[in-house]
Image (cartoon, rainbow, N blue to C red; front, side, top):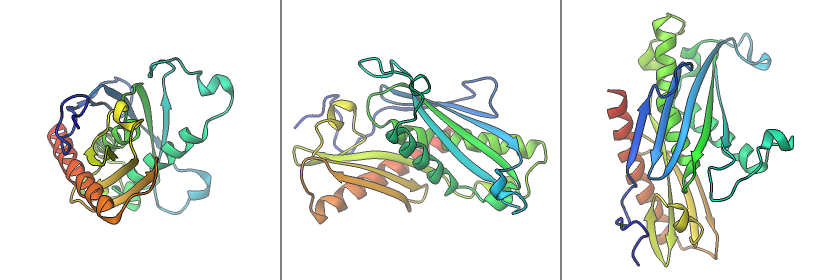
Amino acid sequence: MARPDGRRPDQLRPVTLTRGWSTHPEGSVLVEFGATRVLCTASVTEGVPRWRKGSGLGWVTAEYAMLPRATNTRSDRESVKGKIGGRTHEISRLIGRSLRACIDLKALGENSVVLDCDVLQADGGTRTAAITGAYVALYDAVGWLAERKALAGKPEKVMHRSVAAVSVGIIGGEPRLDLCYEEDVAAEVDMNVVCTGTGDFVEVQGTGEAGIFARDQLDAMLDLGVLGCLELADAQRKALA
C-alpha cells in the first residue's frame, strides 16, 4: 500500500534543523519533519529548583505546547482554559526525560535549562520532532554556558551523548517509519522511539490502537525506529558542525 507522500516504508520525511532561529534564547532551533514544524528554545537560568539546591547537580526540564491553529481546526489555548491537558503534561515530561538522558547534570553544575517546544504546524510526530530539535537547542545552551565558564565540567562531558526520536507504526499490516498525520490516525499500532546516537534506547512508547501486535511486528518497528534515529543523529551532527 502506497504511502500518502510516496515514501518508502523505511524512509524519513525531509528533515531540517535551523539553529539560531530565535534571537533571545541561549539556544533555539526550528525543526521540520516534513510539514511538521516545532520551535525549540533553550533558556538558561543560574540556580536549580529548591528541592535540588546544594546537590551540585543541574536540572533540565521541558514544556510543550501547540499553537491554536497548528492543526486543521483551531483549538483553544490551554492558558486561556486555565488547565494544562493530560496530553500536554505527558509530552512535556517525555521531552524532559529524553533530554536528561544526554546530559551529565553534575558537569552542568547548579544551572537550569528549560526547553520550550512550541508546535507551529502539526502533521504527525510533533513530540518526536520536539525531542530531536530540543537536543540541538540544549547543545547550544550548554555552549553558551561554556563560553562564560559557568559549567562545572568540560562541555564535551556535559553533553556526553546525542538523543533523537521518531515515530513508527503499522498501517495495513506494514511497518512504517516517521508517520505523517494521515498515517498516524489510520495506524493499527502507533509507537514512539527515543534513541541515542549509537542506537541505544532511551524510551519506547507503543500502543495497539486498533488491536494487538505480535513480537515480530514489535521487532520490525524497533528496527525501523533505530534506523530513523541514527539518520536523525547524523542530521543533528551536521547541523552542529
